[in-house]
Amino acid sequence: MLTHAAANQPLPDDIGMPPAHYGVHVEARRPDGTGYTLLRLGPYTQTWLASHHADRLNHELEGKATTIVPGCTATAKSAPFDVSDHESYSDPYAIDTV
Image (cartoon, rainbow, N blue to C red; front, side):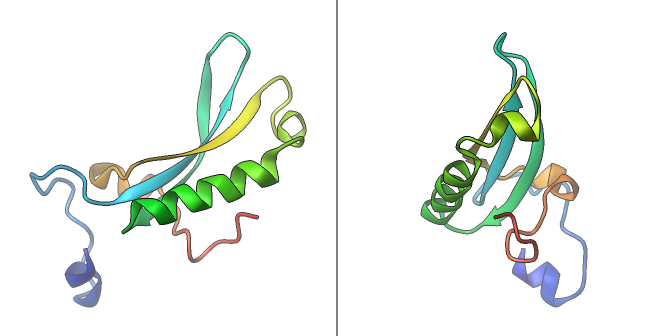
């Protein structure tokens, strides 16, 4: 990934390997279990960092979830980074999520 960035090239859609990077997904869930993803952050190169950011987001979301999406619970969780869907992720270092 860094070699592509250094050469100012887009990331490949599929590199033929299992994901080596991690992401954070912020999701809204209704009481019936249905829901959707509000925000995807990534890539993180270390799983502990993705988990740490998910914990921080969950702390900030605590008690505010119903004002974000009425009738839903918003939670953040670490997840594998999907290289083929990298356009749907936001750079965790370029945006202020908290």
